[in-house]
Image (tube, rainbow, N blue to C red; front, side):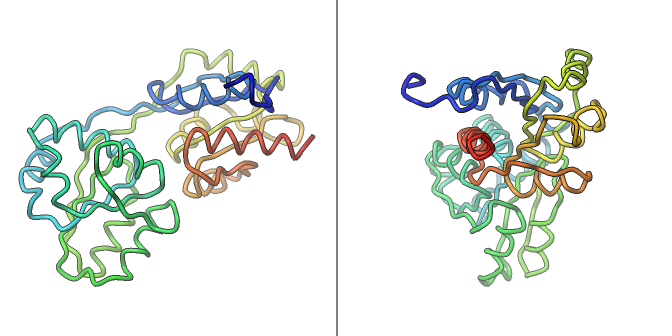
Length: 265
């Protein structure tokens, strides 16, 4: 397949800041387009400190009207724990499902779950979509990470829903062993793109790498992000995302980077 596609990223070194176990899809897309992926995982995904609350709530899953889920990490954590507790497809399909973004919806579809998504791939967008209906007395289960902003749960509760949030994963900061090498590459203007898929990755990267050494008028590196929430995190740090993927997937991000360089030739 790679031989059939014009390799629009040839000669481009593209940094991936996603967790180590979640980098392969984007790395493959970059390689297929002729680019060089540079893995620099600045965060990791781990289980919550305790499964106690999750276990208690999942044992009563039949009492919920809906589950609203905002990320593939939440999907993975929730279903792994559900399997541990012996939940099956009939248990999951007994409730309505709402998802943020196509990638999260696809992760659920792969498990036999049909979902509804809002028009925008953000928690805010899903909240606006859900509040168009009568939520009074509706019971929602929200699987989240430890760094969830809580916007969805707040909005649902404000509109009369009964909301239980439950931690199903933790995002933790990491320090890649290649920090010194990466700093040298930035100093040498040898990195073309830095990709981010979450606000946590943005914040941790900027703790590890001096922004003056990585981005600026005399630097070649540009920022590429998946989705508006991560784009907002970049701008809140005083930086500009040059590339925002219209589809929140590895293929969508790689295609957006490729299109950027096609336009700037």
